[in-house]
Structures are given as structure tokens and as C-alpha cells.
Amino acid sequence: MKRTALRSACPINYSLELLGDSWSLLILRDIIYFGKKTFNEFLAADEHIARNILAERLARLQARGLLDKTPHPHDKRKEIYQLTTDGLDIIPILFELANWGASRVPEASLPHEWFEVVKAHREEVIQLTREVVGQGGSIFVGDNTVIQRLNLTAPA
Amino acid sequence: MKRTALRSACPINYSLELLGDSWSLLILRDIIYFGKKTFNEFLAADEHIARNILAERLARLQARGLLDKTPHPHDKRKEIYQLTTDGLDIIPILFELANWGASRVPEASLPHEWFEVVKAHREEVIQLTREVVGQGGSIFVGDNTVIQRLNLTAPA
Image 1 (cartoon, rainbow over the protein chains, first blue to last red):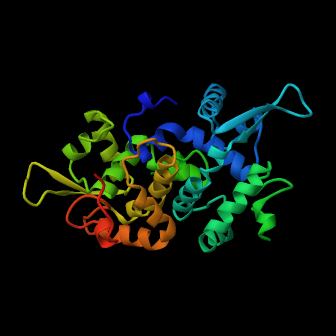
Image 2: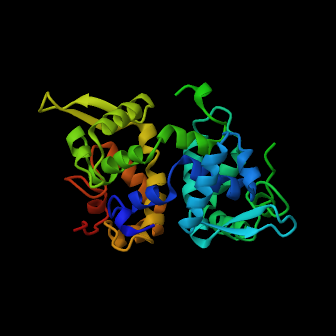
Image 3: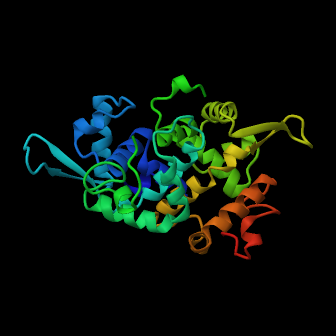
């Protein structure tokens, strides 16, 4: 993103402009928490993102250096989206958004136990999440998860 | 906000839906970091928010229980906006947005020293910020600031 396009020099404004809207943050959530990697996996999110919005947001996150796109190793029709180092840096932002929401959503879809561990061992969990997600794993879903590494129970 | 209006039960999605768009978060930033309290003070932000958007976002933040509006004690034509307890809870979200942006904005408008203190004493600074902002103060501007309480230098 060109500097001239920024509305101000405020770092909060910078983050909001660069991360963009809610849909972009939900895509990053799907990668970090649920290990999603392909267009169709993102499309299947509970929030019912529209196909054209998803395509536009993926391209924008890539253009802004938050996502990398590579060919799928076993299926040439698909592409794999993964976080760059800059993208991995947003993990603490999602943790705080999750935390604020979790105390207010009547039936949160993330386990209570998870929030207690993040609260008690914040820096360690952020570091572990960076590592696992950087290797292609996720917090909750798949073969390589943060909750397994922490010996926690997977959400239902 | 009615539960039926939510796109999913995910707490991250909840936060994104409730906090809304960038403009809402910039208004909350202006209160927490710069001690702004009135419509015209918010209107003067560097990001050039439009008058109608500002009015709509203030009303929405109030309807969602994040802001309280009271008459100005000395000027009946004005109103004072202050954070509710739910509103104060977003302080850590802004800290993480600021942190992510600060390492990427070439000339960030927030002092480097501030980020070091937040990093080293996170929970204490969040607690102090809640207290000061809850009393009508702010992080950087005014008679009652977090940086004074921490013996830090005010930004230029």
C-alpha cells in the first residue's frame, strides 16, 4: 500500500487501513484458528462470505503482503493461501478481538479453557501459535494444532 | 444488538460486527488516546471523517452500549461522549492495532517509548489506562494522562 494513500500517520489508522474490513480479518481468523487454506474452505465459513468479496479480499491481502499464494501440491486446480511473517504478526489482534467477543457472546464457539490459557500464558501462546501456523498448522483444527501442543481439548 | 442479527457464533465475528468499521474504532481511539469528548473534536481528526458518518457512528456506538452521551456541564449546546465499561474493555484491541501498525508506519505519530512500556508492563498499563480514561482522562492529552502517571514524555 502506498503511503500517499494513508488517511493519517496514526499507527492504529494504518492497521485499520491495511487490514481492511471485517471480511479480511475473518479470512485471517480461518487460517489461524481453523487451518483453512483454499478458496472453497474460506467460502464455507459460517458468515457466508460472497464469492466475489472473498476473491477480492484474498487478492488484497496478498497485495498488502499478508498472504502468500502457492499452487496446491496435490491438486493443480487449487491454490494454497498461507500467512506471511507480517500476517503472522496479527495473531495478538485476533486474540484480543476473540477475548472481547467471548465475554459477550452467549454461546461462543471457542472453548472457555482456551481463553484462560491465553490469559495466563499470553506471550508463550502467541509464540507457539506463530510457530504452528507458520508450519501450516492451526490453533484448533488438523494434525498440527496449538491445543494439542498445550494438551487442551479440541472444541466440539 | 440482537443475537439474530449476528452472522455466526464466533466471538471474533461478534467483536467485528459490534465494533463495526474503521471509523468506529478511530472514534474510540480519539477518546482513549487523545481525550476527545465532543462531536467537533472527533470531526477534527486527521482522517477527515465526514459529518454524517461521524453522527451515524456515534449513535451506533451508543446503541451498542460502548459510549454514553451526557450534556456538557458548561455548554448546553454540546454533548460529552464517554466510554462505558464495555467500551473500556476494547483498550487491549487498540493496543494491538497500534503495535502492529507502529512497526510498519515510517513516521508513526505515537512515541516509540510508549510501545516499549506497553510491551514490558502490558497488564499494568491496560489497568491504568482503564482507570484514567474512566475518570475522563486519556493516554496522551490533557490534565490527567497515562503518560504523566508513568513519568513518560508526551508526544510532540
